[in-house]
Picture 1 (tube, rainbow, N blue to C red):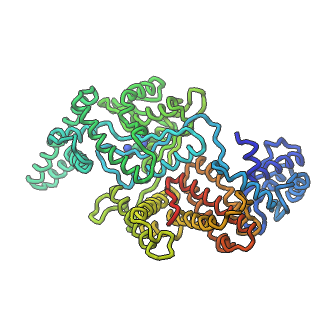
Picture 2: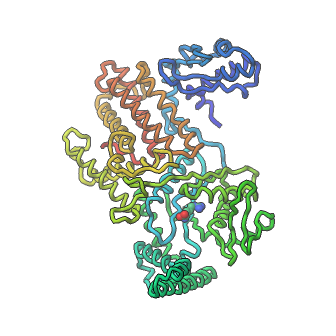
Length: 619
Ligand code: ARG
């Protein structure tokens, strides 16, 4: 529950409450049915807030909306909240806040909580993020699954929820067995192997195991020549052997044969070392604790299929078991004819586990948009079988956050110059190098706040800038869309970028640092200055922060936070242009402006923290 104190703090809340009571009094309706529809004003000239209740409500009651709005205002007790109200157009209510309501609100807001009230929902939230496959290097696709997932997790944590970060590693099944079998045939020393070696072995094993029966038929039919036919015959025979070896390896692994299990664990360790290193560079909370791979669910796959068969939801189809849906043709395969289980079977087990054993009433899957159909099928099957119910009867929300691809300048999936997939590591190295170059260049100017800093300090800032550039670009636009990876634009200190926000924060730190020297006699917590329009706008923007954080959590959409922080930073720059701070003559106004600076800085730092972006004090 939100406390009295918090409600009192937020002018939008206070306004809503007062208007709701007045609407109920004017119409005789129950207060719950009287949403005043308070929104931030679109143009400061017409007030700080707008209440839009009158039009729909008047229609419902068969009265005149302007008259209704006037009746409500006549009954509303807005003392201490509004200086002035007016009815405009068809019945909009414009509200001009009083200065004291604003300064009171800033005072109440300016605590470490920054107006964010802890959720009373004791259920957990599970966030499926990262999702790398063992023996494969992280590429740009994993950037998105990791960074977006981490931010969503942080936002729910910030709202006081228990969050499970679930890294659903691809660490089980035939592809791994195939790699493992190939490595063992080659006598590789798995204790010392690098991820690059593993990656190569993985691809080679995939190629080796790939047969081309259609190619052989075609080669024979088109008389492609004995050489080509023999080649294809050999490939198919080799593939059959490799597949056989992989299947046998999987069976031995499944039965727990120690030497194999040990080798398998070595492959996992080798992969995860790099994943955790990369997570660290990215400033993402992801450790061993968060790994619950496909192998974790291996004993649960049989029972999953049984449960579907028993309820009649899983039916036989030519020896296989499928789930059918009332509204579409496409069935979901959950057991193959040979008895093998599938990616989908594991996801059914994992979803049930997250809801019923981890106690999550929200499960968010941050996975590539190309898996949309897969998650639609899995979620619908989970709902049909009732596994979206927690033990206490609560129904869980299952959400897929489908993200788009990272594109190169040619608008095709990002590749290196030699045409290979970019490893995430290479990409981050380049971003850090670009960020560092930018920071070094700036520090060369003698009046830069970073002039004279040590190489180490500059390198740390450069690193923060490079990572911020990449993360902000990844989080800042509609996640479902593809975006073009353009480091030049991303590391810029201007525009809609991560470094722009960091720079705004560091700039405020600089102003506050200078003020500190002269402020020995100033009051500790001066009232915020809200006399000038730019001051009011900044104060109002600051106060919107908690609602933005709630929105991000509600929609699992980090771009809303990015847009807000950008607006706040721009609002600050506008304020700073119009309202001198350090050179302000009036000591009370100066102190009030400094207060606004300080609160803006807190919000920027907190918001960047939710994006997992470091906010240096000097840049
Ligand atoms: N390993 C999977 C892949 O590379 C992604 C896992 C996503 N999470 C899930 N629960 N299916 O496609």
